[in-house]
Length: 356
Image (cartoon, rainbow, N blue to C red; front, side, top):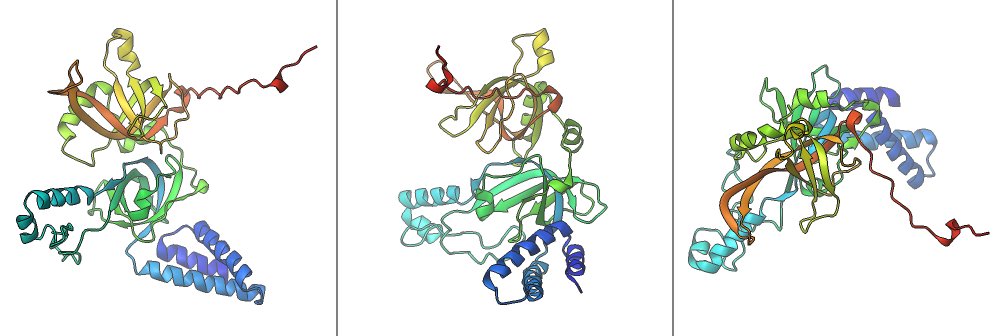
């Protein structure tokens, strides 16, 4: 078979896009030309195909398959062992005998993994061993379908771990391809995906996916600002709750807070016409979100709701609940209502000053 026949066969077998495989082949071929200059061009191409086949052979052992779609938001990176380690150390410091006796820590006070089995019921090979230094997880959200299929796109959430979770660079609102393990239940109207060792999110301009308010509304739904408090009351116990709120940007502070987030306030423009005291929403924007719009723009904020306690006039925490806020995972500026940020004003130099 020639190169194109191999690429077609692999694309079908691995649920991958042929263009993506072609790019991987070109990269390996360029490497072959550098390291094996003594081989003929035909031999270099054959060797590149063989190396690519070995890579894909490993992927076939994985249940991961190809998906294509868009990402609409990326959640925060969470160290899921940090809390367990803190609690184990606190118990050891207050009651070392109990902490050692029940296997929470070893005799040196090192926190141990206390889970005998996984949630699936399978034995945990790390049971009784020291907890890792850290274990990062992040959830991303979007709309996707299986590559090379006639399936209708569905809303998805995918869990990333390790280095993939630590990355802050996600191509939000752009066409992407990736490998993932489908953990969805048969007939589910959404996709529950897990990353595999082969999961790499690749931006693909050829997908030509147009993100719009209607698409996001169809697959996720849009919650009004006036409904946000009720939404949070119902969903506050669900850590993976995802909300999309539409609003007009009334204030935008791009100076990061002590926690690294920027602050954006959005309002219901129609409600503001009737009542200037109508309640808006504070949104926390992490650095990974690209802010390319100005105050006055109409946006969709994709994220997770939160609600803290109010403080009194002296800054002390009370028992009264405060306003519901949104930790943003993505912000989509609706094109027809988008106002661009003003260009940065450059300082005047001597070269700009003309004299007679």
